[in-house]
Length: 157
Image 1 (tube, one colour):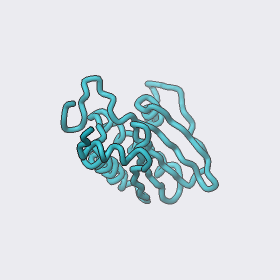
Image 2 (cartoon, rainbow, N blue to C red):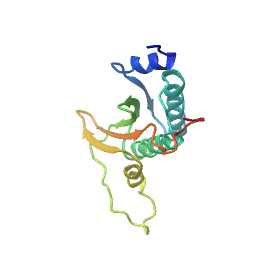
Image 3 (cartoon, rainbow, N blue to C red):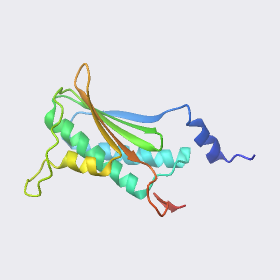
Image 4 (cartoon, helix red, strand yellow):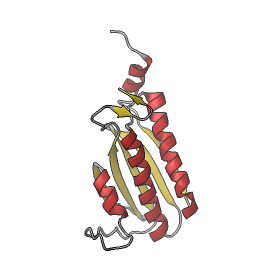
């Protein structure tokens, strides 16, 4: 059977991890965190041939923005953002120095603000909170190719 370059790249991901990580120390860097997510997903699609739907591209940036914003708002010091492709999804993981797990508030359309985790829960495949020896880690998974029409960022299948 003939293999295309894209097939070879996909096969190489079976035992390997594709990930990127960066620390953010100031709230002004939230836009940089979104840019890192966009760049990472573009790389995953272009270099490794994995489909990334337009929805996934937007949702990953939204999740990154919400989780990094919360880390910068509620925990002292830097936060660490890690993006990793696993099982057809991108795991967005944010570590911060606070051991306090976030409170998930009941939906309330009258409440101004504090809807970030509510939004993240609505758009993600999974959401987990873990205390660590120092701080905590919040991990959310967003499916890479989930558009019924096969729409991937920049092309149709």
